[in-house]
Structure formats: C-alpha cells, structure tokens
Image (cartoon, rainbow, N blue to C red; front, side, top):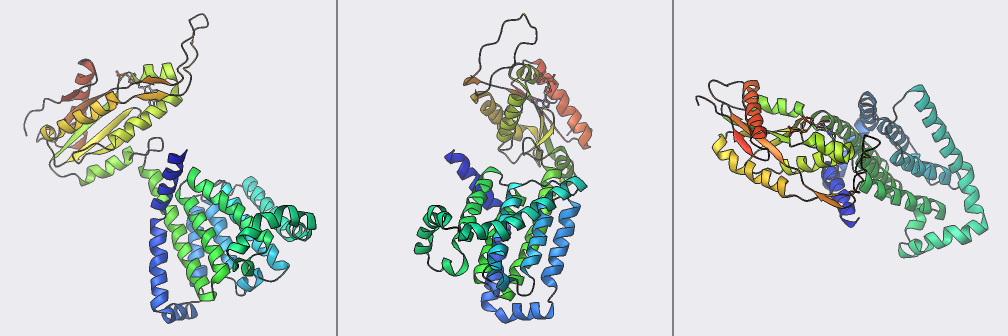
Length: 417
Ligand SMILES: Nc1nc2c(ncn2[C@@H]2O[C@H](COP(=O)(O)OP(=O)(O)OP(=O)(O)O)[C@@H](O)[C@H]2O)c(=O)[nH]1
C-alpha cells in the first residue's frame, strides 16, 4: 500500500515536471518583469482565450472530452469580473462551489467522448451540479444543525490554523475543497496519467488564482494551463502510439522508428518466453499478462546499451546499436539468469480443469512459480544488411535456442562481417 502510494506520487511528479518547470519560468518572468506580462495581455487581450480554444480543439480531435470541458471551465475563469463574481455573497457561494464540483466530476469521470448520448449525460450532470451549487449547498450552509454537526467540526480547525482562508471560503466551500482535494490525491495515486495530472494542476491553479490573483495573473495562468493541456494530449497520444499498452515498454512501431536510426553496425536479440501457452492454460490469461509485464520490466533494464521493445505476443526484441554479438551476449546471459531466478508469487487460483471428469488442480494461492526465456542473437553483416534479414537470422537463432532445451542464448551462424 505504502509503496504503491509512493509509486503513484513519483509517477505524478514525473508527469508534472514539464508543467512545474513552465510555471516556475513564468513566475520568474512575472517576478522580474511584471510590466512585460501586463503589457502582453493588454496588447493581446485574446491570448488566453485563443490558447484555450486551440487546446480545446486539439483535445476534441484526440477524444479527450474531459480536457475539452476543462477548457470551457477555464474560459469561465478568465471572463471579465469572474473573480469578483466568485466572491459575491450568495451567488458567489454557488459559483465557487460549482467550479469545485466540476473539477471533482472531471477528476472522477473518464473521457467518454461526445456521442449524443454521452454529451446529453455530461450536460445533465453539469446542470445537476449547478442546481446543487446554487440551491442545495446554500440551504445546507444556512441549516443550523448541518453547521453544528458537519460544517463547523470539519472546517473550524483549518480556519483557526490558517485564518486567511476565511477571506476566500465559506465553511461549505472549504469542506468541498477539502473533499475534492482528497479525491485529487486518491486519483493521483490510483490513475497517475497525463490527463489526471492536468486536471489536478488546473484545480490547484484555480484555487490559487481565485484566492490571490489579479486579472493579469489569471490570464497568464490560464494561458499556461492551455499549453499544459495541449502538451498532455500530445504526450498521451505519443505514448499510445509508441508504447505497448500492456507492458509499458516501447511497441513494435517504436522499434520500426528506432531501426531508421541504426547505422551499419548493430545487433538484434529476439526473446521469447518458454512454454507460455502452457503457463496461460494452467494459470489463466490474466496471470499470463502479469508475467508478461514482469518479463518486460526485467528486459527493459537490460544492460550494455540495449533497448527492449515488445514485438508482439510473448516476443520481445532488444536492439544494441554499434555492438557485435560478442559484446552483447554477456548482458543477455545476465538478463536471462535474472528472469529465470525470479520467484513469481501467484495470488490467483488456477483455471478449472477443462474436462469435467479430470482432477481439480491444486489451489495456486501464494504459489511461487518461475518462467524462463530463450534468446536468439544476430547482427548486421554485408550479407544480411537490411533489418528484416537480421531479424530472420535472430529468429533462426531463437529457434535453435528452443531446440536446445530453452532458457539459453544462441548466436546466429552468420557468414561475412
Ligand atoms: N497472457 C497473454 N498471453 C499471450 C499474449 N500474447 C500471446 N500470448 C500467448 O502466448 C502463447 C504463445 O505460445 P506458443 O507460441 O505456442 O509458444 P510457447 O507455448 O511459449 O512455447 P515455446 O515458445 O515453444 O516455448 C499463446 O498461448 C498466446 O495466447 C498476451 O498478451 N497475454
């Protein structure tokens, strides 16, 4: 549990690195040259709106409906007098709560697209959140027992710890902000992806700009958020195109791109998990998937300058630019041993026997199993000068490894240099 929280947070920080650098650079610029930023937004008053429009179109083209809604929300924040609306008593409570509820809904939901059905569902949700913010929450805030039992106990400690908060939030708003903060944290840990990172950063920025900012900072932050939204969409799409969805290692498409960069000297290693069909049949496809992920993660840490790719199924390819097989084999032997020695703890039950009369298999709960892999190595020569024929040689060597009893490394017998 603790480890997965740390992993989620570190992945989030990794994803948030570009936005954080961008914000830091903008803050430095604003700190040293506020007049530069001010005059930029005076001369180009539509800059933030145009950036948001571009971000919304890109998000829409790539099917990121949550980010399109986010752009629309941010568009509301940069409207003239938006900040003062948010602080108007009564109506202000409704608007602020609505924004916080909208951010929470976006963090909770998935990119469902804009089919007529999903669009109607989203509009209905937005109207419901609006009604809750404008009618229900003010009623709850005014209701004495709710104040005594819920609002005061949950927020008074924070108001006394940080008195300035009372200038920005009512008790109801603060409770909503706290709840959506917990939600943001949970989703950062559970779903650390770029869209989620963008939503959380936008939510934090919204809280900051509504508390502190003036119109210029407001426009600056929203323009930066538009850049971050565009970055998130492009980064996600790049990952989808070039990373294997199951294992997270670069995909076959990425391999083909890598091939373009290879010079005249390189070595290819083909790797295949041994008896994987039997493994799947015994423990089920889901457990097979977990094992694939594990093998992929080991292969991606191969030493000696190799780059691992998932070629398809249970086959992986490792590319060694500027290396000959003699330089590569010790590293492949090392990774082969690491995979073969790894104890895989199974937490699932084995599949029920296919034949009705056959003996039920023993429960595999907490059972330790092992998998092995075979490897075929080949390099570019004058005779095998194009990638496909080097792959063919590596495949022949892999077949030799399988024939020799598996869990071993074989180098192709290639003529010429
Ligand atoms: N769980 C899982 N299994 C996969 C995936 N892709 C391919 N496989 C399985 O991998 C198995 C490959 O089996 P075979 O090619 O017959 O080879 P093998 O059983 O590994 O035997 P050898 O290669 O001869 O050692 C098949 O059962 C496929 O269903 C995947 O993404 N997930």
